[in-house]
Image 1 (cartoon, helix red, strand yellow):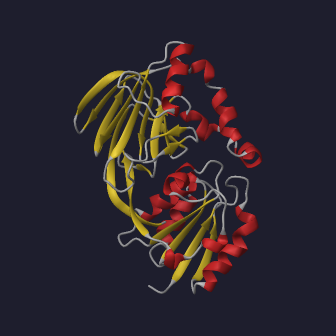
Image 2 (spheres, rainbow, N blue to C red):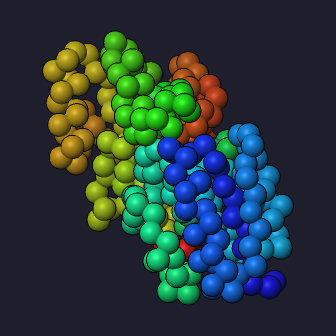
Image 3 (spheres, rainbow, N blue to C red):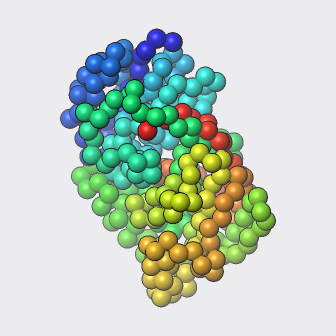
Length: 296
């Protein structure tokens, strides 16, 4: 393939800041001798189709958007046998996964030197064969905020929009789900307020996982389980433990596994990379080791 690039742009991501720097981005790629095509997304799922179509003939795919846009682009690349390089240009409201990748929150065109970036073979998660995720699949407390926040509010307020949406869930913090988790090393059952399958050190802009344990290309997930929260004291204790990255095995459990089957007594609303994934009572998750090559 020739040295060409497809730039997939979500124009409404974050506070629409990509609109002010898109010309500079294209100029930078041009100076690096890339023949560049631009695709502006129009609806949900459009980035997936664009990545699957252009990824077959382009050497570099540039994703300009938030974590949800990145999820769609990766979904398109997974349809291709010989996958091009991926460059993530974060422009979303929270950019959780960008923080894990070590990408700056402020866009700096001057540092966009493709030749000096290293390539990492990034693990990707598969959920029930039809869905996938680049950094998190979850259900329970606060996950609904990520996909129910209004786009106009996100454009105006950025990450604050998620916080305001999450505040609406405070009365339901004591809700939990009877869950059975079958993973590589055994089975865990109980009532959990949150179940999160992650490949990230940051989720929701608040949750932090230890950087010495989370590796993005080791072929395993981290599964975080928060047990049922009965009262305000439980909520306070759990928040403090999360902030201090303390997982006592009683209130908060963290596992590592390549595959898992997660079964619930009802069908909670799942979220993948900040987007609504449907109501699922039985989820089979698998880590696809090194599925996508991403530039860091």
